[in-house]
View 1 (cartoon, rainbow, N blue to C red):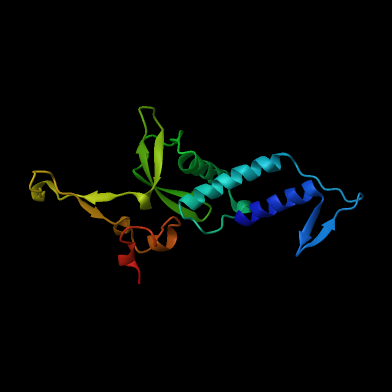
View 2 (spheres, rainbow, N blue to C red):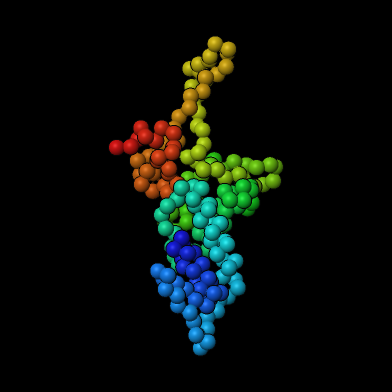
Length: 186
């Protein structure tokens, strides 16, 4: 997708200027040469750039192949834009969506946190699982308390939730910046 967007931007600039340069050598089109593009192309580029921003926020570096995407993949991409670029709650998700959810875009798997937003059904706030602060507490019978009588909560790495296969299949795993993931590196 990234290469496709750059190619489109170059093509539009080429058509708009009727010329291009390579190493300070200019090439101009003659009057017989005429190129045009659909005005929708500029709007498409804006959407693709927002999608790329959402993928960057989630640290997804693998290439998304546009020609392999199905309708559900496009819906998921637009959902990511709403949640991570526009910072808006997402509407139309399944009622009682799970707290942790996988979103697939082609063969790209993302692990997100999904929390209900407001009272309206099907409206959720999506967050990057690997930016969440996860805490555990002891069970009821072994709960520990600090000197002030507060229940003790222990910070754990999001990586502790993962299975070994997840490290190979989740695309938004930012190992370099995820707290305590260094413990799981080889």
